[in-house]
Length: 120
Length: 120
DNA sequence: ATTATGCTTCTATTTAACTAATACAACTGT
DNA sequence: ACAGTTGTATTAGTTAAATAGAAGCATAAT
Image (cartoon, rainbow over all chains, first blue to last red):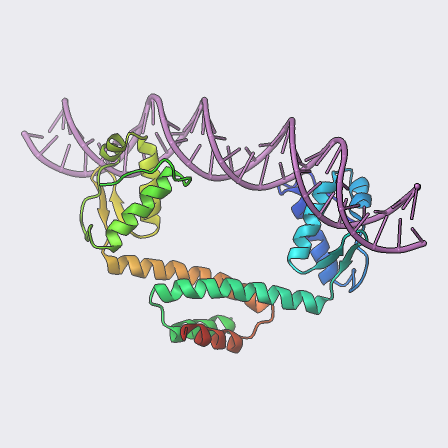
């Protein structure tokens, strides 16, 4: 289901996160599907369960899966994921806006910039 | 002119950057003023010239000073600084917008959010 | 109780950040 | 030209953080 690339310089937990994101967004994994258990995936990839868990924790934090202790991890619906990611985006947006206001950038100027970028 | 705090957990170069930013923005240092030379400041703080240089490089990158090889480093005018910082801000803004568009967030929604934040 | 599941804690290792040492290059005044 | 400034680049050592592994704990299902 997942294949590691040891030539890749990125940490393995990050590779795992990225592959699952892809599987979910592309519809291979659907809402409610069971994720492979931490242990079974660790065995099949010949790596440590802690590394898998780290990947799953990140996927959960970003809204891609949810996890129930003792039961397993499950895929979130893509619309929930989108909503969660949008929320995170607005958080970052808010911070950047605060910075921008400190730099005396006018809201109108920001909106104008958005419209410009949107049409490209 | 500058005092280091070794209880502070932040790296030294970062402390230096922060102090000079403050000196410049508060008007203690003005446009065209000579920054202390890399070596003299290193001696007076009893640290390595390379560390000072790293701090100066960052200050230059952020538009607070400009530097002429063989001559020294000089304070930039506060309006130039503002302009430079605004440019950097728009760069970050642009990146975040691209992300937002991928998440199917509408430009109108963004602008509405800006107006909301501006009035707080 | 057994056997699945995820979680926590601790340790080793690897990687990146930071600082220092040293040598180089450019400009100024004489 | 030369001595004395200045900033710059390269390299190496040290320290701190990120990563991955090992082992045991906690929760849930049957």
